[in-house]
Amino acid sequence: MSEKKLEAVVQGGSPLRHGAIVDPQLVERRLQSEAVFEGDFLTVRRDQVELPGRLRAQREYVVHPGAVMIVPIADDGRLVIERQHRYPLDMVLLEFPAGKLDAGETTFACARRELAEETGYRAREWACAGRMHNAPAYSTEFIEIWFARGLVEGPQNLDEGEFVDVHLMPEADLFALAARGEMTDAKTMVGMLRLQQWRVGAWTPQWQQAPTP
Image (cartoon, rainbow, N blue to C red; front, side):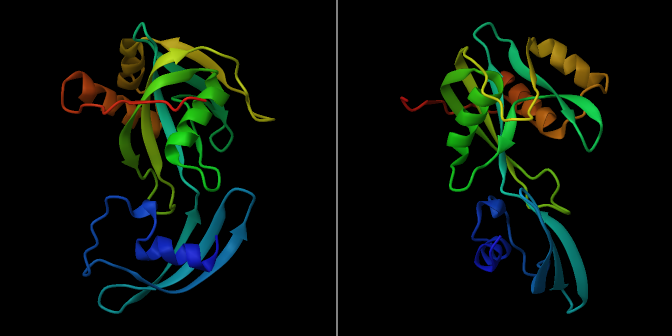
């Protein structure tokens, strides 16, 4: 990430600060910043910061481009869910479809692309359910949640080296897995919470039509 883009993140000019309330008595001010690792996907930075009261500290964090997650709802009410091996945990997790933003890509475009690539499904209607910051203590990553319905099945188009099993699962079964502690993916559980809020009338999706290809 360039110094100009990094400055935008720190000063609030980025969607990473979406919905944030900045309280001057809590703000940590960046004094110095260095990239200690730059990979193909992630960058790790080490910053020297001034804390409230003029104390100083060091912050190490991962710079992430942002991501989306999709809650796809089939016409019969079942949910499209994936099983995927997550190497850092050496575990196969059950998750809603998700993926990172490409450079210059909108979250809506990313959601449509990731759903089609990972599951083969296209959706006629979409609704944004907000954002989550899944690891704010050490990462800039945000995940924007999208609901999709009016699904049309098609072929997967997975990236090279990507292996994903796609399933249709009743809502009740997915909630039962979470209740038993067998669902551990945080973003998927947040998606389930938003789904539950919709079902009980605490949140109303604002549906929009997918653009015509």
